[in-house]
Amino acid sequence: MSNGFDPFEDASLIVAHDMSNAYDAVVPPIVQTSLFTFTDYDDMIASYRGEKIRPIYTRGLNPTVRMFEEMLAKLEGTEDAIGFASGMSAISSTVLSFVQPGDHIVAVKHLYPDAFRLFGTFFKRMNIEVTYVDGRDEEEVAKALPGAKLLYLESPTSWVMETHDVAALAALAKSHGVLTTIDNSWASPIFQQPIALGVDLVIHSASKYLGGHSDVVAGVVAGSRELIGRIRGEAYPYLGGKLSPFDAWLLIRGMRTLPIRMKAHEQSTVVIAKRLQAHAAVETVCYPGLANQLAPGLTGTSGLFSFIFKEGIDVRTFSDHLTLFKLGVSWGGHESLIVPGDVVLAQKAQPNSAVAFGISPRSVRLHVGLEGTEALWSDIEAAIAAASAG
Ligand SMILES: Cc1ncc(COP(=O)(O)O)c(C=O)c1O
Image (cartoon, rainbow, N blue to C red; front, side, top):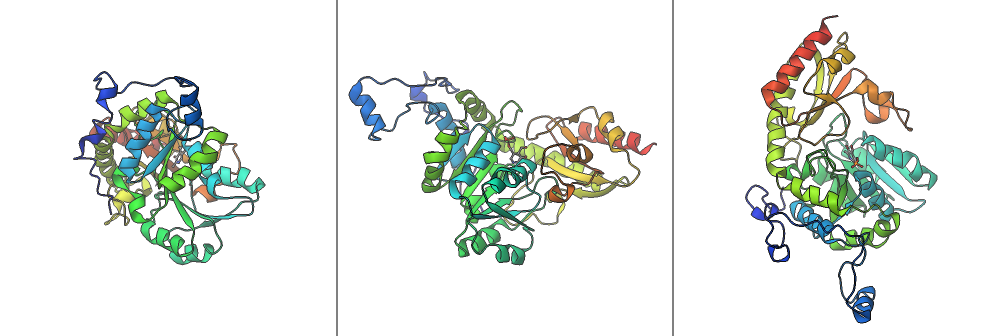
């Protein structure tokens, strides 16, 4: 299901700003300022009264940030969007805008680990209860929903990449009067448009595919004017996780190539994941692109997946032998990356558990970048051969 906006045919991602305002520059200027001045007292008081919507202070409204928000809202098919200083800031501000102490959240298992930790630390202290469900089991989700305030989805989930029928889960939530949010960072709006599937709010770590060049940490949330207005009213100004104009400008730059980058990530990753699945050293590959049919609502697959080695393959040797895949967290940029599962499990941050994240110590997570499919596959093949040799 799509929102009707075709990112491959509509030129507005490329021509994304008002030229009349920018000296005909093909790239919009960065409005790098903390505050905006007023012509006189009347101008100022009209703005404070809300009679005139214009930038006053960059923590509230900045034209470069607004340009990015409008681009993302268009891609997600929503009325509005709001940028944040990080994906985590987008997650915390969104959830805190809709839940209060004593409220109940239903979340899918194997969430992004820092979201899981936010729920298990701050939210626990605030007496906000989170029930984790298997998003593939609609009966289990239906049982958990009565009385909940929020259904928190991620599809595919982090690391184990389980996909869900997002439209079915959003419909279930709606029937119980529960608001649905989804972390759509993995698929990006190019391969999954959750609003068209009935989800209320779509969250992104813009540090991933939206930015696409590993030079920004940012977040964004898209939804109706009313729901984004709720976030904009309190959580945004008072928690203060504001997206900076320079980072917004980098995101505008990155999003021009989002559709073609996503296609390139998908093409290479499908080939590599299939070859790994057929490899004698590999037990399981967790990648939504290997199924005969994509999960309902998903129209393509990105470059992030994990796989589990068979016993006897040395993950350390494999990781150290790779030359194109660099050891590094995050994903969504032009470069290929690897994270070994046992390294994540060694992290001191709490709560931390292999069960919560579904991470096997024999697994690795790869991000397939834009270096070229055959070069990347040769790198993996040679590293597996070295890791099998002991
Ligand atoms: C699925 C997912 N959601 C959210 C985040 C958090 O985003 P950020 O690092 O921009 O705060 C990440 C970061 O890795 C992620 O992988």
